[in-house]
Amino acid sequence: MPAIQSRILPSPLGKIIVCATEQGLCLLEFVGSKRIEREQQDLQRLLQRPLVVGDNIHLQQTEAELGEYFSGCRQQFSVALHTPSTPFQAAVWQALQTIPYGKTVSYQEQANRIGKPTAVRAVANANGANRVSIIIPCHRVIRESGIIGGYRWQRGRKMAILAHELGDTDDA
Image 1 (cartoon, rainbow, N blue to C red):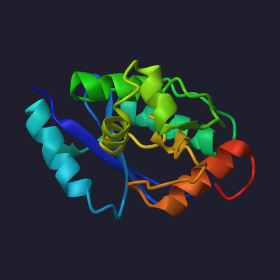
Image 2 (image 1 turned 180 degrees about the horizontal axis):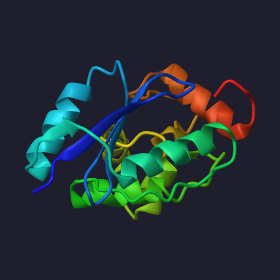
Image 3 (image 1 turned 60 degrees about the horizontal axis):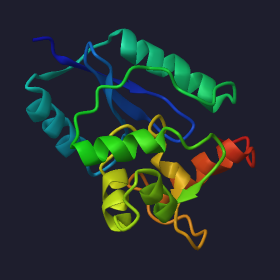
Image 4 (image 1 turned 120 degrees about the vertical axis):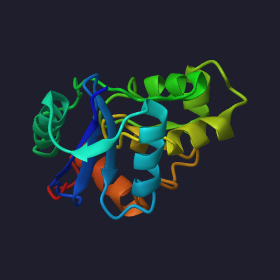
C-alpha cells in the first residue's frame, strides 16, 4: 500500500504541514502545534501505512488552492479529502463544509444542522478533532454569545482566518 505523502507549505499564518494519500488530503496542520506528532501517528495507525516526505497530486492541489485562498481568489476548496473518522465526526465535518465563506455559526446551530440539537459539546469535540484546518472550516464555528472561543491551532490564527474571510485585513 502506498505511503502517506507529507510536505511543508508556507502560509501568511505560518508554515503548514500537509499530508495526503492517493485518495486525498488527510492532514493540514500548522507547524508548531503540539498535536502534529500525535496526528501523524494516528493517521499511520488508522490508514495502516507509513508517512514519508514526498509529493502527490493532492498536495500540489492543496498548495495551489491555499495560495488562491490566501490571495482572496478562492472561497471554496475542491481538493479531495481522505479523513478517517467516526460516523459522528464525519457528519460534523461535512456540516462544517456547508458553512459559507465569511459566515459563522454557533456550536448550537451546527448541532442543529446535523440533527443532534442536544449534542453541542460532542459537536465541539468533533470540531476539535478535525485534522484538516482551513479546508474543513472549523474556524467558522463560534460560541453562541459571539465570542470566538478556542481553536486548536491558536485562537489568534482563528481570528486572523475569520478576519481574512470577512475582508477585515490584508494580512491573512
